[in-house]
Image (cartoon, rainbow, N blue to C red; front, side, top):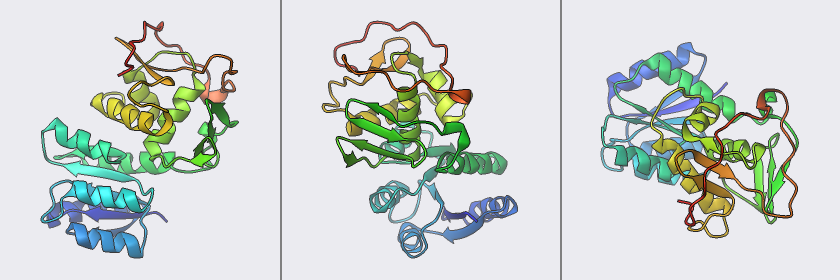
Length: 256
C-alpha cells in the first residue's frame, strides 16, 4: 500500500484530503509544519508528499528542497497563491506537480494516482528497449538514466519528459502536446513544461546555456536532436508509436 504524507497547517484541509486518500486505498501520514514533515519522511519514507506551500516557519519551498536533496520522493505542491512565480520556483526545485487551492479532492486523488503510476518501474505502456544518444542511456524498465556512465538524478516528470523526447528524435513537439503526453493534462500552465525542460537541460546538456540535444523550436515547442553520425533511438511501438507533430521551425542559436 502506498503511503502519502500530507503536509498542511490547515487541519480542515488536511482532514478532508486524508479522508479522500484513505477512501482511495492509500495510507496517510500527516504533518502540520516543515520540521515534522522532514522527521516523518526520514523515519518512514512516503510514496508521495502532498506539500502545502504556505507553512509556518519553514515554508513549503524549503521543505521540498530538503526532501529532494534526501531522495527521489515525488512531491505535489498545494498552493493558495496566485503568483505564478511561486509555482515556477517550486517546479524549479524539484516538485513533480502542483494543485492550486481551492481544489477538488477527487481531482487531487487523480493527480496522486497519476504521479505514482508514472513512477512504477514495470509500467507496460512505457516499457521498451533502452534509448541511447550522445552518451545518454535511458532504461525505461528500470527508470534509470546515465550520461557517460554517470547516473543522473531525475524527477519522475523529468524522466518521462526525456523518454518521450528521445522516443521521437528530430520531431518538433508542441508544449501543449508534451503536457498531454507526459503530464496527462489536456490543459494547464505551459510554464510547467518550460521549467522542466530547463531543469532537464541542466542535467543532460554539456552546456545548458547552449543546448545541443533538447532544442527550442520557436512557435512550436521542443525537439530532441541526435548528434550527427549517431543512429536514432529505437522506434517505439504500441502506445508509444511515432506521433504526428508540427513541422520543425528554425532553431535559435541560444536554444532558450
